[in-house]
Image (tube, rainbow, N blue to C red; front, side):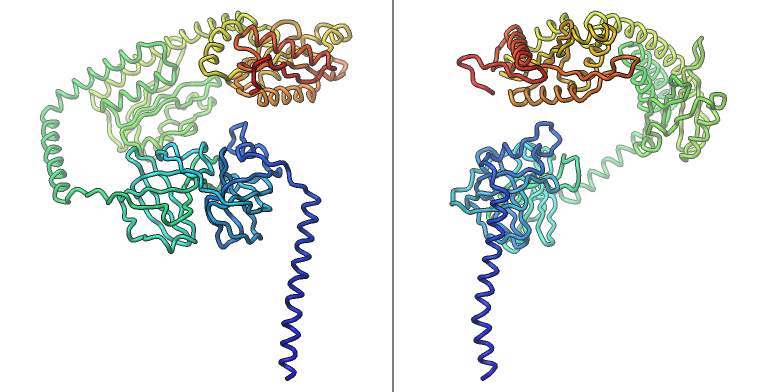
Length: 613
């Protein structure tokens, strides 16, 4: 009787305890929502934007609010799914959340922008199911196009033949297309029991639909792309394995190849002496023809010589080593008949010999060769009237002496290579002098930036390209604030130093696709490869902050100047379609920055009838 009474009391108290616990949890959630109000609803593409191309979202660690259609169901290990809107897809994750989601559920989620093994996601999400909609239509792609960042988080449809199947807690099916591209199909543990694994035989062609994701432990995230299946019916065998060639055919082919090899070997032995002489002539002819050009650099000439000596069978391995500016012997080219032998000899430190061993180079080379288990067949200096340029080294995997034909060919090769290297250095000196003269014509002497003459030639090429593309250029007009005051207060030598330092900052901030120009005085221009006004303004603002934070030396007295710049921004297709229009728009915007108080970035006003990019 007493036991029955206690049970009744417990049954009455437990629901009350659960209600109290739910009330406390709901209270905490209301407090969190009040402390961190949800940000404005955005598209998934806006949350995932990666402007610097480092495969990491720009908004890493910030909160975001998105809505999309769930494309994979949640599993048993916390809350984890993927949603997709018209702009892209993104993962949702919360270790402690329990919410059953089916493909097609429309979810609204708020969470922190994060990345897990390459996949962009919102973690610690607060999720609501706000409706249901048809799944986004899967895009059919070849494997090479699917294995990339463009369609991350979106539903795709691919086909390929099975290379390998592995099954543990989850399933993984590796497929390959006719072009040799490999791709992985990932089957979550919740679906593995629903798949007919016996039907997935090697060589069978499968068609699969799923969500593109990535799984890689560390940067760079340049591989590891895979398709996550959301339903067992999304992977089907569409063609049986390709029949293999019968074993007897392979044996017949092997026997035929063996017989042909024996015939060729006999022919080679009979005509060996004649072929050696013929090989010598052909080798020297190839060297003479290849080394006659002066357009190739020193390294390329040395590589040609090594490749020809090994390709024509003169030696098993050949190296060329030259003296650098410090007098050290540096390996610049190596070629081998055996790829494994090549791996032994490659590397910048494989045969690096410091300059203080100049009198013992031959012995040092022989010791290095012996350490790698090889034998020195021959080592010949590349001698000129002014001294030695380096060495041509011939190697062999076994100890032996060179034949008479090898000796003749190597000595002749040394003479040809020495003349080619000497001629190349003479032409390189002449080209360097010409480049220096040309650089003086197209660059500003003080800042080392390009001048107005080069800008006109550059825009004559780039503007028509931008017209064909429809976008791709932005103009940033820059002016140093209060520059006249700097000259009047500290002298023109300090002003020149400030201009030179600004030139250094512009070169450092510019990318390889950008062009930095000094227009004259304290005015500069940056032509950058940028499609949008937001991107161009962000670039300009970052440049303005760099200059503002940089201390400038005023002279020997140790005084530092605080230099600021005013910037005007104009974007091709938005503020003009010609070089003149863009220059005027950027210049007027720069003067607007001056009039508004300086040290700021101003975007040129959009002409009537134009839409902001």
